[in-house]
Image 1 (cartoon, rainbow, N blue to C red):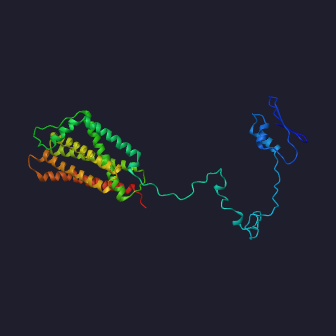
Image 2 (cartoon, rainbow, N blue to C red):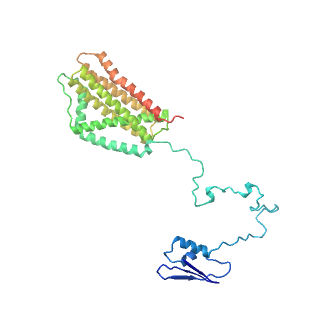
Image 3 (cartoon, rainbow, N blue to C red):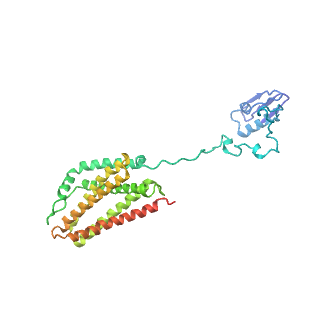
Length: 344
C-alpha cells in the first residue's frame, strides 16, 4: 500500500500486479472524506488492513467546538441549569436513567421489560399430544368394533349364561385378540387420565415433569396393576381350579376391561372438550368402575362357584383379587402423585 501526499492531493495506489491506481483530490480546509468515500477509492480486492490504513491516513480527528451560546431551554423565571461537563455536579445530575443500561445502546439486547403475567393454566383440550392420542384411539376403536363386532356380540350373549361343565372359551382370531388388547391399553390410558384430572383438581396443578409424562406415568402404573392381576388370576386358577375355567375367566376379564375402556372414553372426551365438571367426570368414572366390579363378581360366581353355591368363597375370592389390588393401586397412584407434584 503506497500513500503519496502532496499539498492538495492524496494519491492511493495498489501495486499487486494489476497496475491500477485510483486518485482523489481532497480540498484543503476542515472538510475531510467519509470512510465510505475512502473505501471507494481503494481497489475491490483491498484487504481489511489496507482499508484501515487508508481511513487512518485520510481521516483525522477534529477538535470539538462547544457552543458558546447561552442555554435557552430552561424554564422561564428559573436559573440556568448546570452543565453536564461540570465535575462538581452530583452524580445523579451527570448520569441519566439509561447510563450503564442496555437500553442506552440500541445494538444490545435489552430484554423484555415488565413483569411476567400468570401462565395459562393447563388444559387437555389445548394439549396437542393428548388430542392426537385420543383422536387415534377413537379411530382405532371404531376399526376394532367394525372388525370384531361378531366376536363382541357372542361375548355379550355368553356373559350372563351359566357355564356348563363341558363349556369352552370363545375362540377369537389374532386380529380380534389384538383389538381387545388395544382396548385394554385404552382402558389403562383413560384411567390414568381420569386420575390425572382428580390430582390436577384436588391435589396440585404443578408438577416436576411435563403433564404428558404425568399422564403416561399414571397410565403405566394402571397397566402394571392389570398385568399383576392377570398373573394372580392365572396363579389362583392353576392352584384351585382347572385350566378350562381359568381360561374362561381370563377371557371374560379381558372382555370386561375392554368394555370399561369403551365406557370411559366418552367421559374423558366430555370433560376435556365439552366442559363438564371434574366432579361429574369422577362420579361417572366411579359408576363405571363399580358396574364393572359387580359384573366381575357375577362372572366369577358363574364360572367358579355356581355349581357348589359357595357364596362365601366367591366373596373371599373377589376381595382378595379385586378389592385388595384396587386399594393397592390407589395407594401407589397417591404415592406417585406426591412425588411428582411440586411441594412449595
